[in-house]
Image: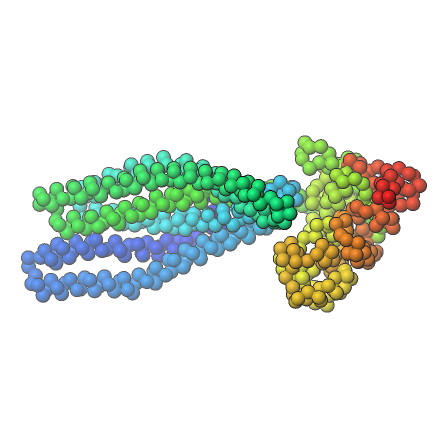
Length: 581
């Protein structure tokens, strides 16, 4: 836990002075009410119990003391309360903002492997729920705990000035309180972490099912899914109940201690008053101070629960922050200059797992600048893996990939990806306007450039037919558009990017013939004078390619032009004949 707190405090450090200021203001806020019990003692012993003052003088003294106290409450306390609340919320929200900013930047640098192995709902839960839970550490652990401790210390000092033995009796319950907190809240952290993980599982399940609700409905799986959700939700309920039971035990014991302690004080103080060794005013003041003393203790018990949740969430947040980067730039990596577009696979090998089965084995081929190369073969042969390695979504495990003779591991990844345009089979659009989705290719593009890119992608016509044209919201993942329309927007943003190298990963395999014809036309226009690597499903669409590479089980089986491979009558010939039937 200590290491987690130390790392979390790095985010707190820029706001240390504001936290100190908030604590100081808070101490003033909590110290003001501590005068009330002392005022009660003065009123009872020195004013009401006075044998020397007349009734008029007693009344005058009473209103002096009450008037002065009221001025403090009406003039000093309101701004103190305002600024304590304002600074406490401001600082904690700024810290959470910084953490989420850091996490999002971290997520941008993680490899695709992380996202294939981690559910989106789990990531979202940590960034939203767990980061929010750590707010308690700032609000309570760094502010309120110190305020409560200061309140207790100030109350003890005032009580010591009134009666030392009675103060000692008041503090007899403290050791039992401290032991109970340590005993119960140690295990509570583990239970809280398990509860948080179960809640993240519920969120992940919901995220996946909401995204795939069309599949559930098409297969009439509503009843089955309800049972599965009952199971996931039930596991969260079990963890929540375990957490609640232990929490309830902790509160039962600790609150019993803090409730019994005042009885000791009342009994001892009453005995002293009966025997004439303590004034009634002091006894009443002490009873009032007991509430001032044990209210902060009860708040500290609540704080222990909240902090336990906060520490468990802190562990999950920092665990995500520690996720290592698989693809990183070397310290001496240099920017990639404007490329001609020569791509070389030099004895490349690759496996997704460190000790896993190789997906690519001794892959050797070259694509010259401006050429169009097509990767063909049965599904699972390694074609998509090849195109994922070129922009360094993953790093090769053997050999090297070179662009214009430069190993891509020796250059800055951003400068590499800036010069590659990709159109994938699954067109990812964001819940934003058509214009914003196209401008992802170049965020600084002008309106004229956006329209020109849309026209080049054969998208302008259908965009103008949308309710709000380029300002139309496309919905999550472009749900309001057809597959062909989404694909044309994906091509438009690559036109806007205008890269010297192009990668097309089965960009037309899931489209109807009309959409495919429009997209093939725009892709041909896009590929003109660019090095283009195509992963093809329909072989009839790549017969024009300068080079066709036949990939099977991670190996390069054949390469050549369409005519050369057909004459060879090998693997490509067999594939083409099957599709021609």
